[in-house]
Length: 210
Image (cartoon, rainbow, N blue to C red):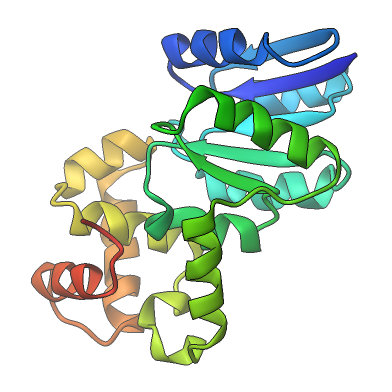
């Protein structure tokens, strides 16, 4: 039996993933949860073979949660299924312990292949991501300013670059506007910039947003 834990805050997405994974060979036992707290509770009460994790659930950052999962449950592969393009989060997710990264616009059969791959102990990456990883190895990481940011700071940077206001970012991340302002200040300081305009220009140049 394959025991699968799905974490996504959208019920329709969880239902869709369940339906897709019903095509896996053999018997499956699937549990789905809507947030990080429920995911941790599920892990404490049951055993799972794979976790499918949305990187942008309300509250706790998916990247921060991923690091904890990799530390506390190193034998359970985590497959990231995200609305965000590979350019934004894939490399960080893999460095934080993910076994694979897929976007939600991927074909259904790609999800089943990805689950089978990580269950066998492998890493699942698309060909386009493999090229990006190769390019990343050839580039001095010190040249890219955003590499100095923490995962949460990077998440805030991407949202600022997408044009979201401080209030909206705070609502999406379930933290205070004051905390978002603090993150913004840290980001500007670490990247030696002075305004959101500079951050947006940088994000476009580095391909962090479309």
